[in-house]
Image (cartoon, rainbow, N blue to C red; front, top):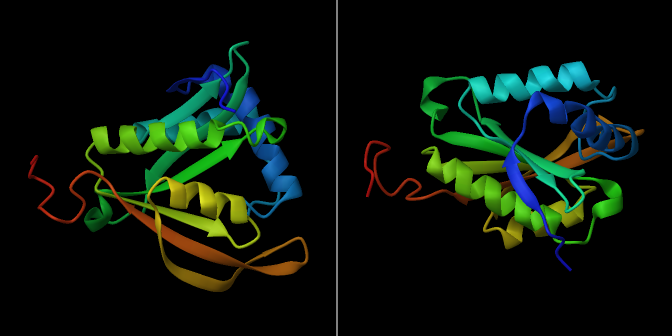
Length: 179
């Protein structure tokens, strides 16, 4: 069942709730390869940096106004040739999983990335996170490779699945084409 969810641009006032959600994934899973969860101030700085780069950072609020998840995109690579490609990230509060929140966030993120002119979205997903693979596949991402043993977390090597989704016209036209 999908909750009533409001998706909007994140603000620094959301940083505390976002850092609490993210801390779970840092400490309890391999969804993030960070080992120390960033605090609210560090998260506020990350939100500002993503937005300064022209990328979206979205947050989902439930009907009570609580932050139940967040999604953001960042530049896929620092070089100019990657300007139209982004990497997507989605995290849902652990006690809110299975309610359609991830689907709503990923769909809103795809739409916002397309609106901003991105042409390709990538997702790097830990092999220990099969639900994330399914979420991305349902949103139109296709598998394009596996990075075997790319990360070390919780005493084990973790594979990373690479998935890709065309945004808008993708690579069918030059980026200057607006179709």
